[in-house]
Length: 189
Image (cartoon, rainbow, N blue to C red; front, side, top):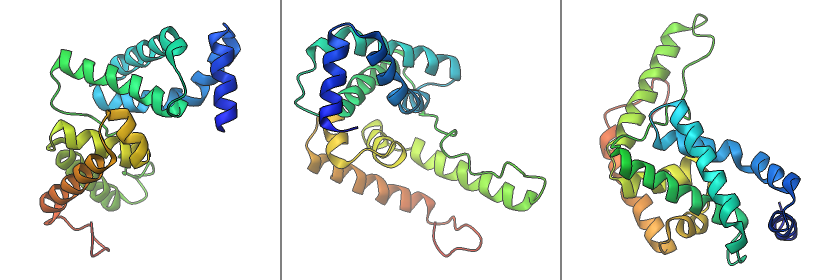
C-alpha cells in the first residue's frame, strides 16, 4: 500500500467510511491476529485481543497524523494492547508455535523427519521463550512478523540502534542455547 493509498484510506475512515475500515481490517487482520497469538495462550484470547486492537484503532484513528506509516502506527497500537495483556496476565511465555509449525502435515510419509522437525520447533520455541520480554519482542516483531528495524523501533518507541542491539543480544543468546542442537543434514541451526 502506497503512502497516498494510506492517506486516502485514513481520510475515508475518519470521514466515517465503513468500507474503508473493512479494507484496513482485511489488510492487517491476519498479521495482528498472529501477533496477538504470540502474546496469548489460546485462540479465544487472541481473537478477543485482535478485536480489542481493531476497536482501539477505530476509536483513535482520528489522532493518526501521518508522522509514521499507517502500518507502523497500527503495530504500535497492537503492541500496546499486547503488552497490556501480558502485564494483566503476567505471561512469561509467548506462544508462537503456530508460526513455527515445522512438522510435516503428511507426517505418515516420513515420521522420522516429522519428529525431527517437531523437536527442532520445540527447541527453538524454548530458546525464544527463555529470552527477556525486551529481547523476545524485537525477535517476534522483526523475525516472525517481518517488520523492518525502523518499524520495530517506531512500534516499541525505542531508537533503531536499540532494536539492532537487542536483536544482536537475542541472537547471541539463541546461538548459545541452540549450539548443541544441529538438525540432521545441515551443519547449522
